[in-house]
Image: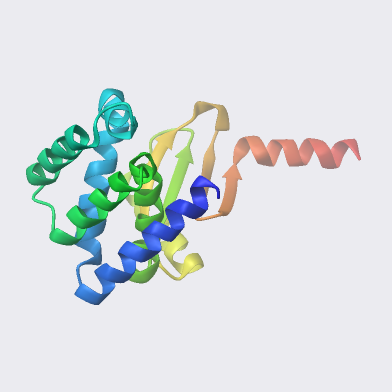
Length: 179
């Protein structure tokens, strides 16, 4: 079974519990905090996922992390289950899938906006409004700059890419002139 399907299965299970309890957003935040800790500390990720370390020692490390973030009982049980089943390495993937499910349930979607130059607040607001109208959902924008675009904007909302970059427009013009 692939890591993606394992992550989806576990995310779906913990999401179901969170929905029943009405705590799915808090559960998502806490699991996300643990996943970020694993992503930022290679040593932590290796220690938790390496069966060469005694499970009791790995459990103590996880317990300390859970205590530090004041994790809910649901999150504690879930993470310890992952440890017992030697699936703790999948936590970052599970967190990503869980975030996607939470956003879907809340009517949110993430958008990555790439522009040649930094966007003003006014431009960003107009772009956000247009993307919300197109997607029918509340849009959360992450932005970055890429000077190779020359001008314009490329927005990726979910799996859909809206390419309004000058580079792409010039390439399309060149292709039509060559034909």
